[in-house]
Length: 285
Image (tube, rainbow, N blue to C red; front, side):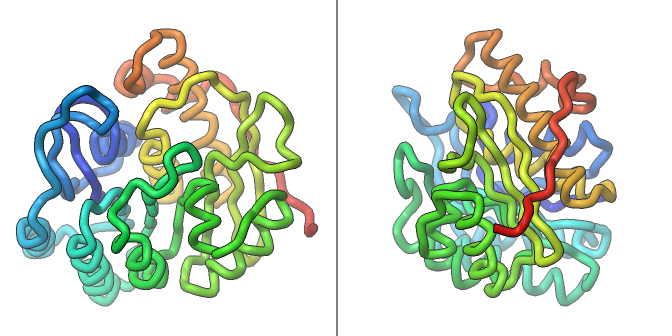
């Protein structure tokens, strides 16, 4: 089992590949990690060093892993934060080549465009490329609620809205849509939910809200969901596992009172979450 993961990297903390690689390796998956940025830490600290990588360097790295046979041996490509429009186009070109060379390869796109608290936090030329170039190549996308509304071009206030609007996104290419951090009118107080929609069904999983919001939770969720799918789990089981595992990590982080997720010390509970939250089928609205 092998995954090619293309996203940001930080020297300190847990976002991008610095959140995604370890959980996948822990699950027995060989990860080829390609950075799009190299930063000292995520935004939000008093200082930040490093930069978005030059597109030619990213292109060289992608060509290099192709030359080493990484594409032929891969099960899935996962992409996250891209950093620039040029890199977005390069990743789209790479994914298209990779899928042509390995027809069994699946592509999971985590859009990483923004959130409800901050709005769009990427350069304005990136969202149209995610919508027009990456989504059509994707088999799975994992937007948060804010990003999902951007991708479908409409507000999604209820479960029915999410299920209906998912059809608009699936028409662009993806067969599986997972909407994270959903806050809907029918979401019970004190809970957060994640929904997965495919043409053959829809499911939701609800977990208690943990009173923290560390950066990188979307990156971690995408990695957990992708790792479960790579290991052969169907969408409902992968959804339940990923939601349970990330809830366990957030509980551990809240106990420690730290700004960064306690991913490494949560290894045991990521592999075997102490509380299991099963995905429930959503009936047609």
